[in-house]
Image 1 (cartoon, rainbow, N blue to C red):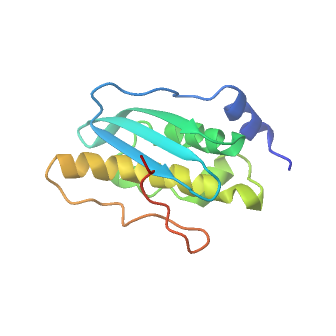
Image 2 (cartoon, rainbow, N blue to C red):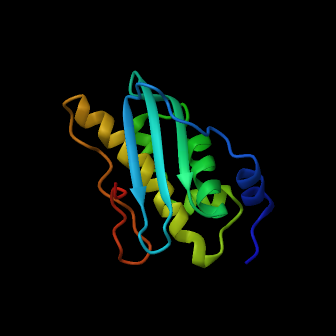
Length: 144
């Protein structure tokens, strides 16, 4: 399986790794088929993502998509951040092999879950519209 140079860069030196203490929102998603698990934590100010970090247990593509989605979302409004698609994530990485597109779905879902968690904690309605999907499988919260 061939990965782009950008995938390899984000896998080898991922950006924004870690957990934000006292995060405003936390999104945890997983794919039971491949075993990838992602946790995204966010800090929000004036409905914009001031800080975003991730922890991912998974393959190189899962780590790369987590890294790049945090780069893409940082500084965005919540409304814009939840609109980031799997295709945009893959494009930002100069493509993903078809068998690894589910990783971009997980990254988008993790971001949406973190934003929705923040909104619900704030007494507001979620805005994400639900998990994005590639193949008919819904990728929900990671199992504990």
